[in-house]
Each structure stands twice: as C-alpha cells, then as structure tokens.
Length: 139
Image (cartoon, rainbow, N blue to C red; front, side, top):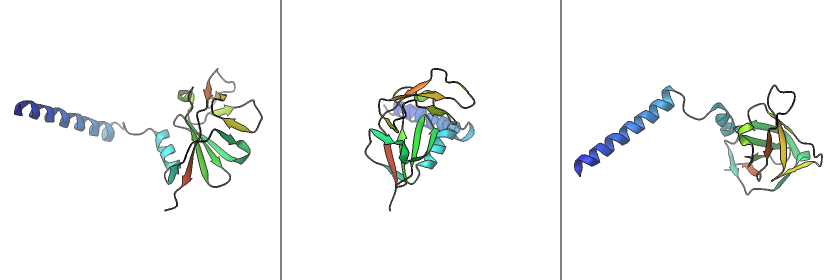
C-alpha cells in the first residue's frame, strides 16, 4: 500500500513539473487574445444576461478570443457574447456584417463574419447567445 502511494505521488509530481515547464518555457498559458479579453474585463463583474442590445447605444465593438465585446456609450458597460454557432470563426480584426438594419442585435440572430483582410464573406456566420453585461466594480 505504501509503495503504490509513493508511486502515485511521483506521477503527480511529474505531471505538475510538466505543466510548469509547458507554461514557463513553451508559452502554453493563455493566448494573446485571451490576455486581451482579460485586460478588457479586468476590473469588471458580470451581471445577468440580456436578450438584445440597442446598437445606437454601442460605442465600439471588439472581436477577441472567440467573443464579441460591445462597449456601451452609456454606463461604462461591456456586453460580452460567445456565439452559440460559429465562435471558432471569430478572430482579432474580424468584422460582423448585419443586414437587418433594425438597430439592435438579439440572441439567436445570425450575422456573417468577414475575416481580417477579406473583401467578401466566406459563408462564415455566427449565431448570438445572450449578452452578458460587465460593469466596472465599485469597491
């Protein structure tokens, strides 16, 4: 019994050492996009999700880490959406093409994605999930 515990501990130590080596030497930590998203949301806390966003109240849009971040003009709120379909097609510099023109975006709505450097969309689309508001902490 004692011997198997010692072997198990040795395996755990080697696994931890391999993980540390991976993170420190090979850069296996968060990707650049994940670090950008973390910086955007650093001093914010999530609130209850909302179904739709009024685009007339949006100041800027960021596509980062397979998510869409809408910056609100009012109230210093960031709305984050990880689409339920097509999130993997979202990269830094992508543009969302919406043909609805009704001034808002809602969950379950689809829009096309234009990758950075492209002039025509390639059948990439995303379907929005609910939008999670992130408000600045008031500690």
